Length: 374
Image (cartoon, rainbow, N blue to C red):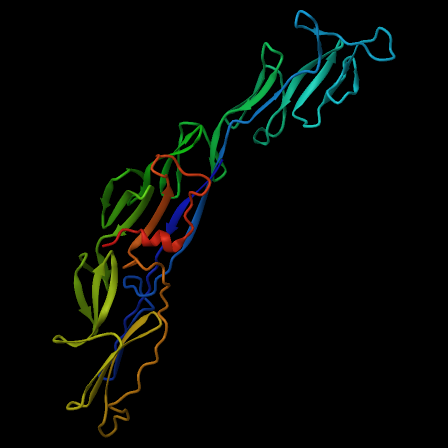
């Protein structure tokens, strides 16, 4: 069984502010990490797998008497000498050991009666021979070669779940990404979520629960048959000053709003009473001043300068600012703000078990469109 699980999305914010007197340009979008316009998403796939119980079975190839017991065979052409006829119709001399084409069991001819003497283990145990009615332990997991009264011999191995090169016993919990799973015989039971506390230690979070740690809120939510974990920063920091969630403020002719832990640029302002939207110009011919607010790539810039007077050298009717694409990737139509520091999701189909094999949602648009909206 193979289960693919998901998923971390990391948003990195970059911005800077610089000021120039009178003929000024203020830019935000390419320097410090406490204000955001450029947004990036990193998609990580976590792979988990299961090793279900391998079961190989064989029966010796013998003639059986009226009492139901095997009867010794004689070698053809060798009077009085015992021998065995293997499943491929070949004669095997008394005492010979041999295998069949599948190579999974070893047989011995014992006075004309074929016996099974060993099983070969799976690749998990290094494909080693195990004597009948014996067992082998590898990395804490058993592998058995067992005989039964009807003459059959069966090889079995202990079930396991695997992640990052480690095997887990049935009943053990494993953490895949930010999700908490339990290894079971028929797959993975989805228990809940995992988050990192202020000391970067893993902490369990039950289904439907949320936990606030410092300025971060952690969610473990069931939605449309899936279980999803997300963390959202609560509050923002700009130029060393802290702001509450939803609070609006202004600095250096740029207006901001703290939204989902991210400092979002709303636009520009000329003075305390006059706002200026992104993409707009304001020309004050009486004072011979031009004010501009525009986006260049992922940055928002405010500019003002003197015009139409001796020595100004600039027109009071500037050419439009060339339109440039926003550097921020279009992640999903329903995503309002990139406030999610971490996001993980697993399909359960409402059963509590991880769906297989397609339980990893690789459709980024679909994933982010389902993210909690604020």
